[in-house]
Image 1 (cartoon, rainbow, N blue to C red):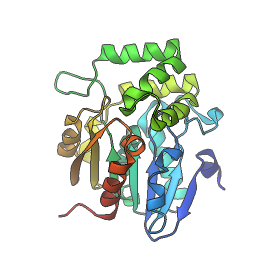
Image 2: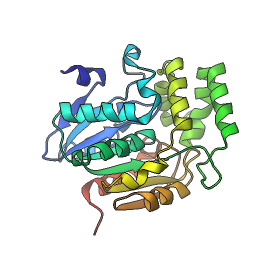
Image 3: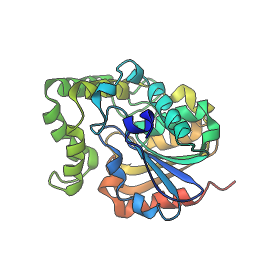
Length: 270
């Protein structure tokens, strides 16, 4: 396997003319898609990869300067698509990685047929004319909690983020993936999450986007789906699911997987 493929633990499963690329969000790795993949491999070629900095990647490959911006992750994604000769993919991205895909699509729209966003936010921090869900003081407190004791912070946030009981299988799985992220890398990614702003770039995104949200998500207010929808340059559609939590594909697969499959199978009507 190529250096790019090995560094990102790229796996290609199934067979089909169309490739579905699955991009996980912060604190998880490609295993978070385990409920979705079995429903895709008979019809599509499926490409899974790990974002650099995930606990499943080699931390020595994490470049703190490169990954201080969304562009660093976008260049990684483009390198993976080019290395594996992916054209016009259906990209399914969770949280930050959904925004990474929109940035990548601005650079190379020819590589994307459509982008399916799960729990995406263009900016977490509130401003005078924008509600991202968090005041800067709250984000500063979250960072301070991570700096004091990452494991304790992760353990305390996992159930809240997923909207599940602490002893649920989903929370245990999410906690395991969170714990695997090295503390200094977690702080670096956390800083990016708290400071990035994709709002000015949304009008440049011409690839069709399917925006999927939970009805209750501590990280992404429901209003952000409509905000993204109204500001994208190309066509888009919003669907709010009757789920709770920031990772519904992990915590509520019985509801989320059928929704994702419908958006994968069907394009936005003209």
